[in-house]
Image: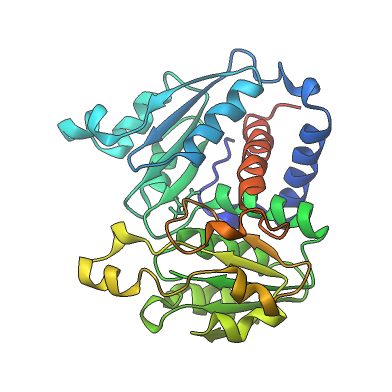
Length: 305
Ligand code: NCD
């Protein structure tokens, strides 16, 4: 039976750990993987803007010896003629061995997975989830901190619409002794579903605050996020909230020396470029890890040994 990746909890902790081990092997021995997907094709169906996610999927497939087809905007696809996601998924299954789909509507990749005869990967659905960013984040944390347990994780910014945070909480909640500090303006706190289904039901230790300064000293990981302008109902609210948190060298004075600063990117204004060369800034290394973990994921879903 084919496997899809729609929600990060579609993967067990053991499977995630195996993906990380595989990605680490790819980093160590890339030449072993150059032919693994020869004659396989990945379709990237992106109905929403993307730089990293789409290009890292494509570069992952090329580095495995495979090929890539697809579209990077809805306007150039038959969606403009009114075709449903379900029909597009069925169609693309005739051309590709695996599909990565990004869509502004929550649940669209899930619908696609029902109709596609090949594995479907959710590359971000609205304000919902973004499981491959989370795999990227986990590989980053493992590489930078050497562990995925015993961590205090601060998530800062737009925790309401930021899909990467929702998936990150879903994944990290399953490791031992994880504490979350959720730092956001009142209006951008995590949605009720994340709070009740992932945090409260899982008995996870978490607290909410509006102050980054107050949270900083205890953090092992600081996961910064962009305020998700495209998901706001009105521009005034966006303008009022967009600069709620700006990480500057000054704010890092009370941080741990081995803090790891992550950001899924794109950054708008929430991290000063003055921090980019601080050894604690992991966000550009994180981009590269994203390619390796997507290589591992493609191999797993295509059942390539
Ligand atoms: C994120 C996304 O698309 O959700 N970007 C990404 O995939 N790296 C974060 C964002 O857009 O803010």
